[in-house]
Length: 548
Ligand code: ATP
Ligand code: MG
Ligand code: MG
Image (cartoon, rainbow, N blue to C red; front, side):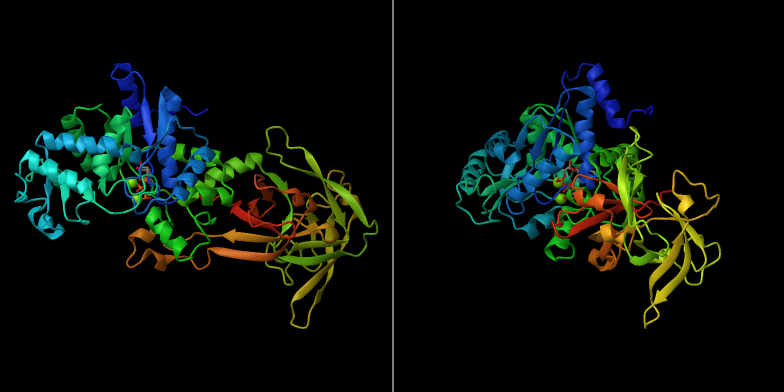
């Protein structure tokens, strides 16, 4: 296996374990249940769970559900399903909302230490005194009320005596700090909203900065790993822990995953879903884990992708084609090769008089166990791809054309003798003769042909709908474009081929199966399939466009 050097977070963890700073490594994955998880989350999942798989200890799943408005139980459930599907198990399932009582207690403790105060200034007034990155801010006129008065008003806030926005609770830090986040940040706000778990128990909710680090500390998280946007929050994270004298969790930041030709914030993905620009969170074009799963990605390919891109300290942009490379590499080893004709045209073999015969096809020459074989029925009436015939062949054309010969995969060499056109001039049928001595595996014909094409026997074929996908956006960086990111949606991201023919062995396909349709790519069954109509998604084409 590949010898890999440690990433910078592994180095920190190894040092901390070797020096005895911590005995047990504890990490957490802290999604906000406000949408489905995406491939960026997969990176954070692989990192957090990967660390404790490697170094021992454990990883908690903590729903960061302190914002009552956007959170739903549907999202909690889908997030759990996706983490499990990726192959990871958490030690404890926890909810930041379970800490509301403790967090409230922490706020009271800060007030009692003279380190927090209630403020009735309006949002505009607060902004006006906030200063700028180069100029210090000014103290709020309410900054110096007594501890007793602060406790009294904060209690009334909790008891629902005020309307939304009437008061906030602020940490009393330093209005001149060069770090804007240290200028008396808001730690609690009034919000009369029902919460998906605590119902109407609370009408005040902690802000992210006051909930996250304290939740880490309550759980004895040793390494709290987050993305680079939180670098400037670290000072505040440490300040709360120090002033509250609680378990010293430490925050470390890495570069978030950015992928070309897609968007990755749950808020934006939700817009696509709500505006019906995609069929749902699990639309196979979505960068969500559920979308990738439906598209045919395997957990292994996603884990491998996360490993390949590594853990960086600086922002970067990863090519979508690297993700495709990873799934291709996995499926090449595991997917059986089968035949499907996506855009069919009839081929008739005029001298084939056997009726039908069973041919033997290799399932997967790349499989570690050899792959085995299957029976493929053959007859004089076949479907082939329309694009495999040219009435007037181009230069170096090795497929079918009048007078040309080609091998039918697993079967015989055929020669095109004639073709039939309809009144509009479209070719409707190709007529061939076959060479009986040219059967694959026992060919004594002595004829060499350059082209091999796939086919399906018409009387044996099953019909299927095939869905082909392209990039969801035409821009490589839809987030960075002028105007709305949705203006850059690719109108051709989905192509439906309603009348494809597949070999009969595929009638048994199930949702876990992965198939290589010879020459056409890797495919999987879609959940829209019914007994009467199978639907297949193309996961990825065969061609590797990723430049290594
Ligand atoms: P989004 O805006 O996409 O909803 P988020 O950071 O608000 O992202 P959370 O649910 O809070 O979403 O994220 C849970 C964890 O996943 C966080 O620790 C966050 O750092 C991590 N994460 C989110 N997006 C990415 C990404 N693109 N790359 C790596 N990690 C990510
Ligand atoms: Mg977040
Ligand atoms: Mg978010």
